Image (tube, rainbow over the protein chains, first blue to last red):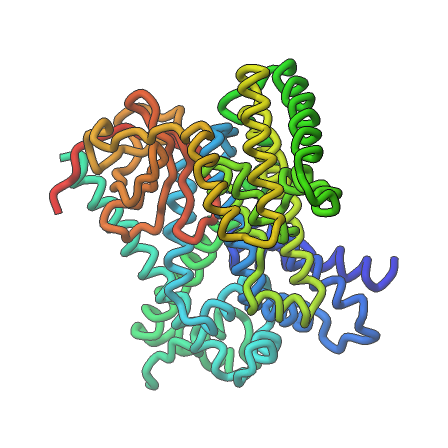
Length: 172
Length: 318
């Protein structure tokens, strides 16, 4: 097994999951993951391959130009699709979509550094790796994560409660 | 006893503390009620975070549909297309023989005008004479999608990947631009042979004049021809919808399920809805037909997509 095959087998699934959570779009996550592995191919030697892969993927996500292009194309095609009225119901329930929207809202409410630390930890990265990717001291990763987790949970609960309240008003 | 440090507790629960530090926290968590409570809360937050983030894993792939070929609302019979072709040749021949300056007519202006794309905007002036307002509108929208901004162009120049990201949009939209003007020409020429000759004569005149040295005169000549094209369908009146609030649900759900959304924008019979009070981060597009809306709902970032139906309902009290 070549190095790139080993890298792919070891990290592709976690990298795509990290990116999917970060972006909310599986197709886009796949694209960024592929680009990350392509860049890994060009590197002769990676000291900490996991930290390197996640750092490169995070940098690619920050490329706002790509994001804008993608969003514009996505919205244009969505609008075209709606006009044509040819729908195939995706296998996603409304409840699941609402839960995902609440989670997305809560995640977006976090500061960028907190959000990234949280998502990287969820993929099993060590504190030293998170500190390296974010450029912060190892000792502050725990504080960053505790703040991120608390804010995520509180925002999510508030979002769910607000939606339930609106549903109650609408029904009465 | 030191007060509980939340960051330290999370690091301990994540297994990221050195052994001696971990042993100290473990001791505190076992003996001090305040630390016990803090550890229990931290465990809850870690579990809740994982659960919340896991709900993001269901982001669907393939929600962007493959581009279907655009079918016009009307169809031109095959015989009419053939007739239009004959008339086109005849009309062109008549014009060529009547013109005093043959070199200007040796090019193929009509063909160029009908195959203009967003990537070849140099024939924009003659095309205006051929297409209806509806087609012009479609062409304009396509150009907006396909044409990168200066910022994007600089990004594309900096790295080849950005350039690739632009290309699919061009490829997807190009057929829309190429197809409709051709059909428009056939439509104008179709009704009768005599009418077709007249139509093509006017089209040809407008086109050829547009290629001459006086663009202002060509526009003045082209304007009346545009009024001859079929008008776009009249948009449905929003008064017919009757409410600004809609109950949005999945097609399989019962009629009283779903959420309430408010009308944000109407473009003919295509409506854009937003979640009531704008806090839950959802929006939807529906097409209104016979007291029922069909469409899709996404997050405000345009991510994810769920097929929905919508019915009017009373707006909740603010």
